[in-house]
Amino acid sequence: MATTMLRITTYVSKSLSNINKVRCTSVLNHRRWRSARAATYEQTVLNIPETRVTTLPNGFRVATEDSGSPTATVGLWIDAGSRYENDENNGTAHFLEHMAFKGTKTRSQTDLELEVENMGAHLNAYTSREQTVYYAKIFRKDLNKAVDILADIIQNSLLGEQEIERERGVILREMQEVETNLQEVVFDHLHATAFQGTPLGRTILGPTENIMSLKRPELVNFISEHYKGPRMVLAGAGGVKHDELVKLAEQYFGKSETGHVGVIPILYPCRYTGSEIRVRDDDMPLAYVAIAVEGAGWTNPDNIALMVANTLIGSWDRSHLGGASLPSNLAAISATSSLCHSFQSFNTCYTDTGLWGIYFVTDKMNVEDMVFNVQSEWMRLCSNVTEFEVERARNLLKTNLLLQLDGTTPICEDIGRQMLCYNRRIPITELEQRIDAVNAKKLKEVCTKYLYDKCPAVAAIGPVEGLPDYSRIRSGMYWLRL
Image 1 (cartoon, rainbow, N blue to C red):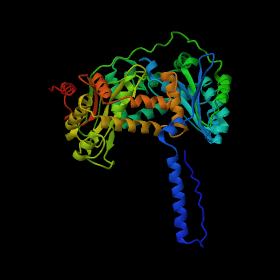
Image 2 (cartoon, rainbow, N blue to C red; image 1 turned 45 degrees about the vertical axis):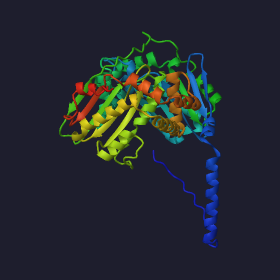
Image 3 (tube, rainbow, N blue to C red; image 1 turned 45 degrees about the horizontal axis):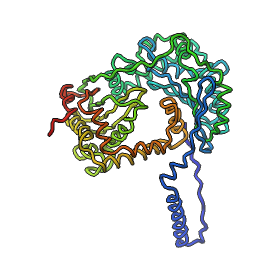
Image 4 (tube, rainbow, N blue to C red; image 1 turned 90 degrees about the vertical axis):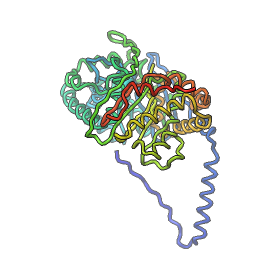
């Protein structure tokens, strides 16, 4: 969607002298600086609007944060992703996401598109391994219309045979595009090897043969089995009045079924396996590698310390300034020694497990050195990390968490995700206290628990001849020192 900016220019009379202009600017800047100093970090955190939650009799939840903004984001977060699929219907959740905008019993696809465009709204959706999301960014006056549309596409989608056939081609083209995104491919391989033989090991889009064979009854069955009141959250952020959204939820979702058709879905534990996948292609200019260990689930208290450790490792690419003085040791080494083109640490969480690790892109000659330095830094987290480093990582983590909540859409996503993961939204003040409780001793304990002498999962694509064999990588997960 194109963005139009309105520029407002104030004209100053030519009779004013340059001195007066400078003096006026100085006064304005002084006032701005005073205004910036007026609110401390603690005051800003305490002034964040509360998140209100209401549960309807059928288990459907409504959660909002009202900031009084002229715009709002409202959406449905559904506890149904590719993890709830099997080998035969893998790809169904993502297929349904595509079908949601292809027409309902009361709106054709054209009517739906025109209605959204005439509102000046933005309607979108995405599917992850554990959740499916449909949301709209709107003017606050159009809240009723947005909820009506969301309810319509969820509850009354036609799922016509012609539309299904047309969408097959769209999804197959999307799969081809994903194959060109090597980072996505590496992470799919990483999940496939780390959680092999379990639902988390499957891709979100599903295999080609499933996309070609999925039929309307399978899509309908997935909706009837998973799109239930207790597994859905209507989240709103920005100019959203909680009581108003609750009334709309009662109107449009109050009659959603609470039971399940057929077998009640069970979230089976996904077994982690230390293993590797290598796709060697010496014609590629760069190697793309991800190394990870099993992390913590959303509700695991160790997750906070792992978040701090993840922030301490950090990220870097060649466009970043700085060298040996960079706060991340790995970034400083990469900048001064040209170890890699980029790297990014990650902490991916699921309900009961996760992946904690690093993804990097490097030349074929530097693959082995990069792996050595990554593992050396991981082992240092288990033994030699300092209080100063941990304090800096804590501060950076708190800053990043606040920066990620800049706008109604990120806030709405945070509300919906946390309601499904924790059944509440953790206040920023509580999260800050939990982060501050992580000191060097705690970080070393948690990193030792999850990193030290653990079997990693490895996924690599490209000229990876220089990547050490798995036994050597495994031996780098501990130090024999006095």
